[in-house]
Image 1 (cartoon, one colour):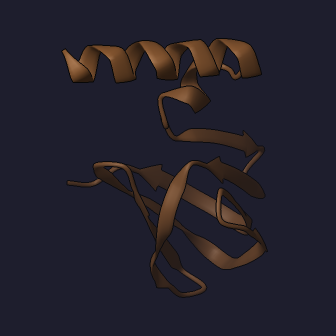
Image 2: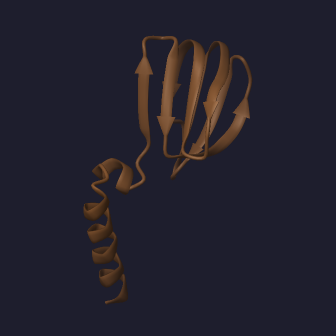
Length: 93
């Protein structure tokens, strides 16, 4: 019963704040701009970082960006921007 009340309270707060559903549920948002830039929101942290590969920790998964001359150009608690020549983006187990 307590979980149901908490869930209702969270849904009410999300509605009041008019947050998009994906943000409210903590889903990973990935935006790519060509092969040169990727913007990721709702990640937890950086697992590894090199000019050829960046691995991010996310809710229940890992995000792997592979490419050439990769660099982190924006980094905050909620979002990260990576630039360089992006060759692949995957969610390995």
